[in-house]
Image 1: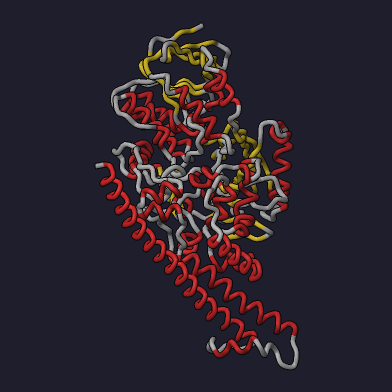
Image 2: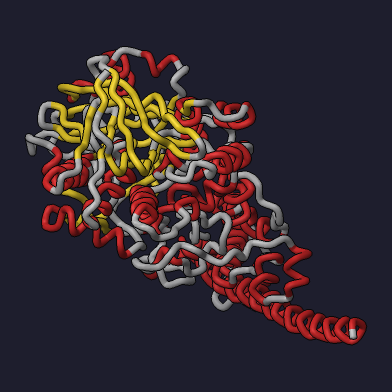
Length: 616
């Protein structure tokens, strides 16, 4: 067994989190050793090169609301970044919907009846709001209505996670589509890029983003090279399978190289990006049974990409397309050439990445590459995107444990593991799998940055990164400032406690505020389409006198009559009236809520003064 000399810091994992930690340490003059089990650095953010065709393990946009991360990206890669336009669509019911939402496109794809029912569903969600959100289904239905949830969220989400949306924690929605509401989607469609209450652009609606010329792996290969120049090593192909600890400290880690040779690395500080389930099972000695049990119950979703080389210079204009159709197994299609033209060696050809989300026990996971390429070719042709004869080459890449699963029990399991790991004073876990948190690349990097600064003597809680589910979803946190410590103020409280606190914001959390724009839009859609559909039904029925009763609305709607032009006039005028009515109702309701907050505050102040006198 080869045994390395003592290293001050050992980093397990050469993905964005691990390499960022090593890079930050190197900037401060601290050397480290990065142990990467694979043949490439970058983890899920690596770029694979197949005969000159480059592709991601999922698409990775370089956009962050965290200034220090944007600075790191520019510092490492600089002029190699391209500024790329975002274009993506949703494929549902044989129709392509623009995403983010475009009203006319959505109306054309859904039709007037479905649009009317969606408006009714949204109204119902606002009037009968689910107060205690536990599941993804409840979270989305509260904000968009159950019918829109069924169309644009349910099928795709269940493809990704392999479990019903009623079993997925609301935490995932709060992190992945935080700050986004129907109001923001409509505002973005009409006025441009949306911003949350904190003034930050909503991540889900970014219209342009930075992207490395040769894919995201370019960033991490460049980072690895800079580390080497500064004296820090990256050891590829070395899989850590034992973490040795005693008396509350980790003393070394050991594992095997790709050739089977056993290696061991000692250190004074250790940073790990290993999946928590694998990490707990690697501890020597093993932790208590309850910790082992918690780790064994964590789940991970696996992922594979079928790459097709198509003999056509342009297939579709999007960067990617979400596939919501249940008729095919694929969940998303990436068009790498539209991310960067340098991702293909031949401008006359296009490379497509068909993404399949699986469990490693699913039969497709063990299919041969040829069989998977045939499946991908058949499904892509079924969607009408290509002719199967145009596919001239292909390959498959598998990624285990790509997505930590947010089921209803995951948080309790993670809390148990976290409490135990806190007993190891020189050991930190970071990154997507190291925290069992579905982080974007920038959040994973931030955990690495904080871990490195902790090694250098600062105090940051890496577990607090990207925890908007636990904090006010649109409030300003320390993430917004490069040098600040991540200590956001907790504001999520139960109803009873909110009333006792008697804070206006807390009461608005407890009693969901109606959004005037969104409610107005929903009422306007219902009113406008109601008049239009009623007119259309009477016109198709015909008769000597068409719709005499409905025609009475002409006394209130200028120019309205039961004719096709009149139906359009009724649609527009009643839609505007409905918008005003809905906005007025929301405004009055919110005004009443604010008045109640002031009344409750005064009453509470009086009671506190009475209590004080009783204590004297």
